[in-house]
Image (tube, rainbow, N blue to C red; front, side):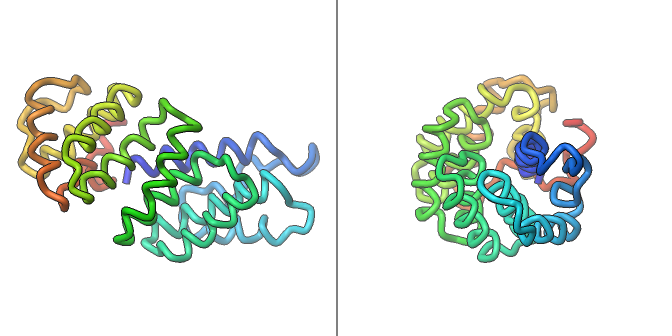
Length: 213
């Protein structure tokens, strides 16, 4: 989905920011390829390099975990996020993504402490607010979910609003324009969505690619 592309970019940025050496830049490395199979293979290659340690190693585990998660292999993803967080305990992106993997694998409550910690580290992250909104929604906390979706839009701006507009329109809950403007019509659509534990305001990746690009 679109929101996971943002996390891929964030993790890729971490890897680029910590090159192995001047003669061995990671720019263009398969570990942060947009293709999940290439990403998994590339990150595995990095992980197996004996000189890769510390934060870079943690980032490689987190990127491989993201590849697994996007393929629906949540147990494998969680194991890699475990290792990433062991290596880099205050890794906000990995904490949020592990929470998302728990949510997607039907273990939402187990992911709540992770996303809470992620928000402590990055209190303006729209992605973490979105994750917590999904978790609260499936746990039956409708008011908390609504607050978090609104926070995700407040910090994520026009693009996050567009994602919810497009996703809710696909569900038949929103009939307004996909213009990135938070309106009472959109709020009512989100209010309707949070009453169902299975309603997801985020659209599949392909449905909003054009309107949110």
